Image (cartoon, rainbow, N blue to C red):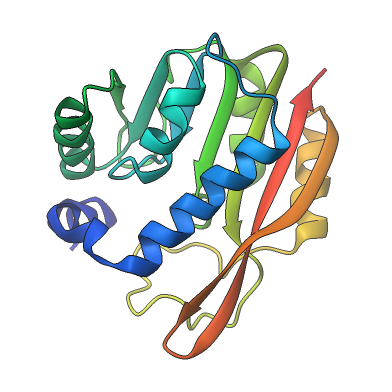
Length: 203
C-alpha cells in the first residue's frame, strides 16, 4: 500500500483520534500567537489532511487553500468545510507532493507533514518561491525521535528533526526572523513526543 492509499483509507476516521485533534488545535493556537493573522491573509496549508489546522485558522485569515496528496483527505476536508459553511480551496498534489501550489501566498502553514517529505531543504526553497515578500511560514513537526512514533513507516522519510537543522535549512532558503518553540507535547503509547513550531518571514 502506498502512502497516499494509506491516508485515503484513514481519512473517514482520521479525526476520531483525540490526540490528533488536540495536536492540531495546539498547533493552530501556537500559529495564532506567533504570526500576525488578519482577514486579508491569503494562506496555504501544505499537507492539510482532513483540515484540522485549515479550519481552525480559516476564520482568522483570508482565502485559504488546502493542498494534499491524498484525495480521500481532501474529500473529507471538503465535506467538513461545506458543513461548517467555510470556503476552502482544494489543491490536489501528486504523490511526490510537487505541482503548482497556486501561489503566491502571504502565509504558508504545515503541520506534521515535513517528515513525509524526502527533500525538506528543497521544499523550503519552494515555499520561499510561493510567498509574497514579507510573507510568513509556520511549520510544525516532530522533534528528532527514535522512530517509535509511527507504527507504519510507509512514506516516513525522517524520524523528526533537530531544531538546529530546521533553522539552518530555513536560513539557507532565505528566511529571516526564524523562531522555534514547542507547540505541543504529543503523548502516544505512554511516551511523550515534542512537536515544534518553526516560524519565519520572507525577506
